[in-house]
Length: 524
Image (cartoon, rainbow, N blue to C red; front, side, top):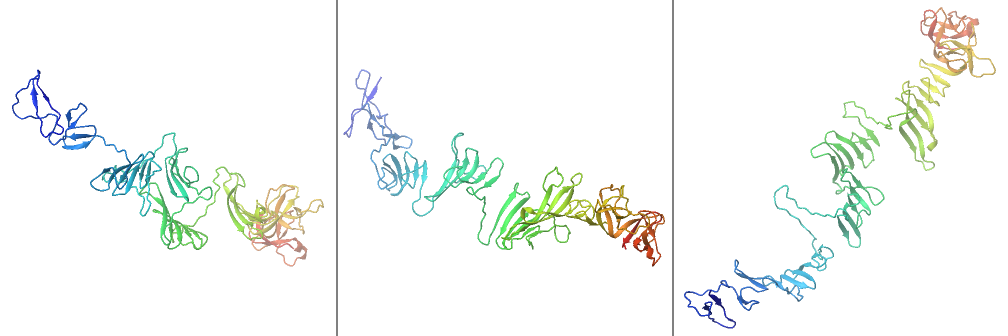
């Protein structure tokens, strides 16, 4: 089989090609001679077998692009930004080596450094995996831009740590002055902002991704959240379940110095006037420290203030709501008076009002308005009359003035019965039933059924229902003590001295036969 032999041609302008047979004898060549090792425009090299080749370890010929390309470029000496080892065009733009770092020079200015620590942009000594630095003028900016007009094409920065690793966070700081951190606390998986270089130290803001709640805490002191605009601008905070649904808005109007709470469906809910500190509910112009407007002008809906302790199992005397009147005098500040709503009644569904006065914690109840009856008690919490003072003197429902005395009639009281003082020295403040035509009448029994030895109301002035004897009475009749013990009798005879001290009063109601007749009392 014939083969080609290429001789050493270094330094030669021409060379001879012989074609030999297997015995080494020359063969006659007809036509053009082509060297199969080369392509047009290539550069020959001596390879490791001391034969011609168009590639070597450092350079190779790209047949498709017909150009010489590097296999390996080795730079062993340090360069500089003015003399980069690998240059682009004839400018000072390229790559150079500095120690164990690779640097990029753009027009004689180092822009990027890669070393064992990380990548530095604007710095030759990166302190992190990526360190971007600006030393003079302008901003330090990193921009992510996605120009694809597709809703699912985002520009995303991801910061992740391992499941059992540290906190994924971003640090913000003014050198040697203040630091902030923002990220996820790996201990409780809450998003936090801290005024330190790590979480959760000095947390000032927390978002609970599980509940959606936001907690704002300033160090360990007062919680605060500030929304601020320019001096005359409006700032607002909107609460809404989703876009387009009903929402509540808190808005501060810098023009009229008022804070508004509004609803897009109900309008104004509450207003705070910063100048006079008044608060208005359902009104934008409160004229008092607290003004409640029931509804729009003209609809007659009243303003309501409701106080409720919220407990669903009340017991007697439970306090449901309290209005306090406070004394701020420097000589002895404290509670000066209180109005207290308390539970009462068999089912504790009645509400009674207690009025307390005093100094500080020593305020005690002085007056009570009962629930269903509406009775007013002064010095008593259980007034049995429309007006009762310590349950000793009171005003009856029909206009009588009554006092409480002990029943010593020997039996239960009878309403309307005439009574006189009990003469036994062992018992004070007591009464007995008058005898026939008695002249020591002091009052009329108000209520029936009070047992002997117990206190009962006795009407001593004003209007009372008097128990008449069988003769009855007519309006305008003069009434005296009857010949029937404990009863009244009509006596219209004028000038009768004998009956003067028996007189009870005058009838203002007609009564047929025995029974109660309403009279105006004037005992002689």
